[in-house]
Image 1 (cartoon, rainbow, N blue to C red):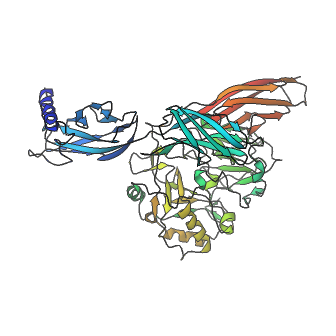
Image 2 (tube, helix red, strand yellow; image 1 turned 45 degrees about the vertical axis):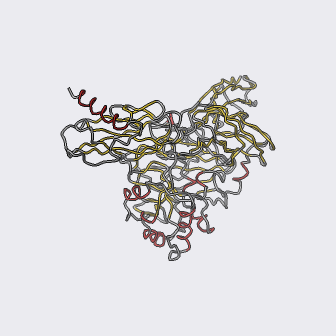
Image 3 (cartoon, helix red, strand yellow; image 1 turned 135 degrees about the vertical axis):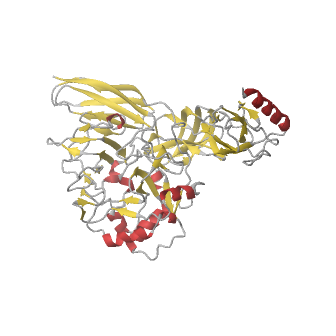
Length: 594
């Protein structure tokens, strides 16, 4: 029987509002003459077009906690300004109104003169890129057609981070033109404009008949902990390699830092020698063209892993060696002959040289690869591990040219690109999303630290560090190396979380707005010839729409381009796996060996 009074109260409020928007509703939390007050949380929010935001109202001064929800003074809202449910779930319109702001109001059922409000700024949606046509272009002038969703007028096509001349066709199609100067594999993305500018994942386009040049990795030294000799994984436009020293600070930076704990010290999670019988850091090994490929059997996340084979030697160091124990047991392998990175989680070697792993991921070191959204990798955040390590060889050279990897005790169910996955253990809005980047404040004085530590701290100012996994808070990852000075590294503990700021996070993906798009479409996958004598060569060819990277199993592994040749020793079914940021597609062909 509370409906009648509520209706009367709303009618009164609407009469008070007249044509003046929300003028008749209290501007914010505060008691009415009867002592009833309403508070709305959050009291301000940024909401992307077409997405939802939960609002909650707290009513004090009465036992009746019921409220009615309004958008811009209209009960339940409108199609133009967005709608709100009786439980406070606001759904933003698909098209931004002008101005791009609305007011959410909760009116007390007990006292219609008591209301609380929240100021909402509406942002453009995050674009989702499904495919780019053509997938390969020559050096010189080119034109591209991009398909996807959530494109808005003013969207910009980025070609290796450089803006192209872009024409908006529709919310699902753009065309762009530009000129390519050098060969290689280039990441193409779409950036929607402000308000709330955000960028899609990338789709790779091959430039020039020669494609990417694996020789870029040829100078990397072989062996455990081999020096990269100046090679930096991934292109310069990759998020790991971007200079963020002047990027804006996230508006929630203080709350995020305080949640971590302002006094929590930085801890280098690497060093020389052993601790409790284990090496300190995440090891890696560099292999060459002579390394044989072996099978990988998955024990946990096989459906989110890249299939083998992979060139993982039987003596590859496992994290925690010589007594890995029950830790993450990461194995990192860099192939300097083909410029691929292979990473395993919870790995163990079998007697025949094959490996078991909880999960595994392949990374093209010459391209801007994006794991499928919601997929893990060998790391909880769906990120590569190797490019985020502080390595002795680069510190000794006097410069780290990339972001570092670090862990925090708590994280929430959200991620920020380039992350693709979360492993939430906190429901707090102030807990970090995976992929959150911290930057050492420019005002922090590094002059009192050693030369080695200054290299690390200056990298944290220029590139920052990216949250990659749950673990001890402010632990920075690096490689184990007997040349580290543990006592000197320990002095990094004089730097605390309060000396950092959070780089602006945009977009932050949650379960409500994970980008959606099309997995690759395998148009053709053929073997020529399909029946051969033992010792004869077979060439596999494929045509794929929207493919990011490819793996041919068994025997072949990760490949670039559109064809590869093998010499099968027995009748075998070969499978092509094509992956992009939206998923994986497979196709198989049987080769008969007579």
